[in-house]
Image 1 (tube, rainbow, N blue to C red):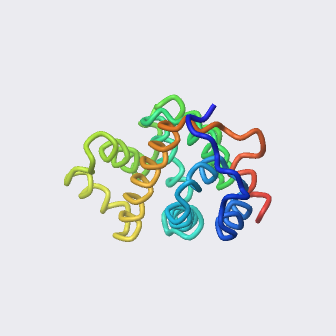
Image 2: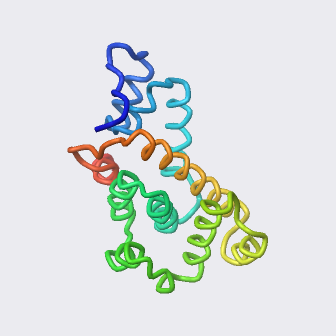
Length: 180
């Protein structure tokens, strides 16, 4: 059970209720709606990173799943396994990540995992890691990769701190697939 109650819809602004409806009533968004303006900005950035970015979607999901592991966020892991499948990640790659057998990933994917780990553990990727990443990623992709890692570390912090429950209904990836 969550450590604080989800807000009652009647107490929320019309803009927040509309955004929650459009984003599938996910518990993370419901919980964040205690801080309405922040939730709206958070939701816009999350949508941008998930749907409008230049980063390869499978690589993005590898980073998010690794962050979920590092932060101990079962919610993040659950939601993003479904997103990973929706964007075409193979079951073999999912099992590779679940088993933390990162040496089986491509060199670009391995660098992305290293960046995620360094940001989580050291508050930033090291210069030598960034230099290696520049071989595989454009500057735009690299910045986006850093934003994805940071965004999902922040998200996991909220999820774990408030013990946000996994929804009973369809996961995020299933709703994304149904919408397309």
